[in-house]
Length: 188
Image 1: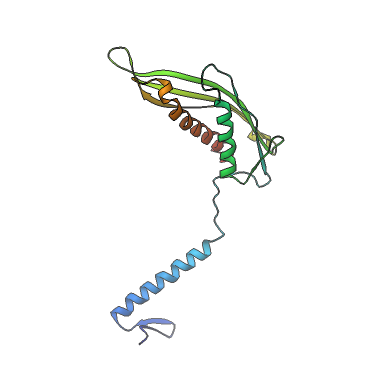
Image 2: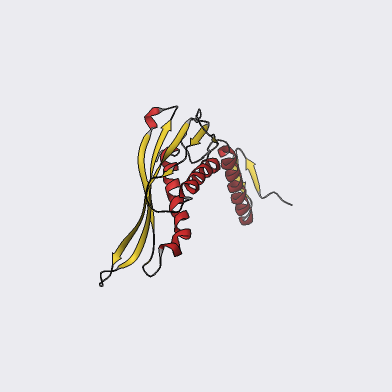
């Protein structure tokens, strides 16, 4: 088989039109491989901006400080928060004295009527959960904060809370956990 491209005095010479296409594909392949290999190990994204000296996190039990809500709400929230840190960071969750500490209260579990209709009834009901979180960074106290995080889900007016609670509460808690995580670990 005849070589389709030759090198003459440091310049590429293409012998025929098919050779030109082969040369172009070969060049693109080499360029792609070079970029891929040069990027390996250079760029790493973990989704967090945690200092490398932070190794542990403690999630103290969040307590229910409001009327209403399922009895297991604090336990469910605590477990979701711990699981999120374990899954998306290399931090070890420890029972106490972590480099980062989270604690707080579930301060709101509210059923609200929204989107009023012409008959002065709610067209949509809203379940809103509010969590007051206190965060302590034992390696950098300037990152400490106390902040409320809240999220809601709507459901149709013709349905009751008990019909929707088991579906809505996990979605709401997932979003609050994500918001707390972003504030503490991703610095958003």
